[in-house]
Length: 222
Ligand SMILES: [Zn+2]
Image 1 (cartoon, rainbow, N blue to C red):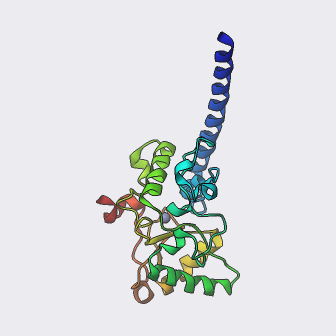
Image 2 (image 1 turned 30 degrees about the horizontal axis):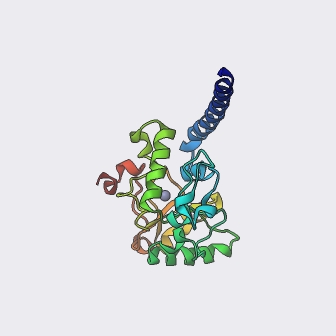
Image 3 (image 1 turned 45 degrees about the vertical axis):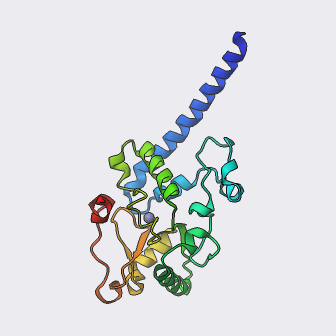
């Protein structure tokens, strides 16, 4: 009678060790997040087991196969590794504002002359996906206040409206920080060197001054 219970307890204990290890790893990465070369929080969140592809055609059947809430797939804006601004068939790209996408493609084509390739780590996101990222950020950073420095809400996010992309790797964001304004592509937040939005006037007047982080952005106060 007691034996199965004990086995189950041991399993639970083992699971807790794994969870603690993951939490420690995430915590470690968040310590590095203040440096400009740090990986985007989205990159970290994206490193969760990708069950996207299998769930794409049957979102209702994504089971408890993984302990992660991986039920949201490409249709919600999840991005497969190696996605570029030219990948029309991926909703995260296809649902971007057409003017932003045109600017990104012009810039990416010119950057390619310098052997720099833009990868999109996140583009358009569904409200559900944004909500999931926000929940994950709150548990990662420990408070809504701190999470708000990195992830917006479904009603305020420029990703949900199709007006923002998170670009990588580092040589791509370095190229954009130097040349992006010529295409109207601007870094908006000082703490997110990967996050770009379209500011059409930038080609004439340069990019507007950055906000230190999204909590300083009036658009986030809605
Ligand atoms: Zn972003």
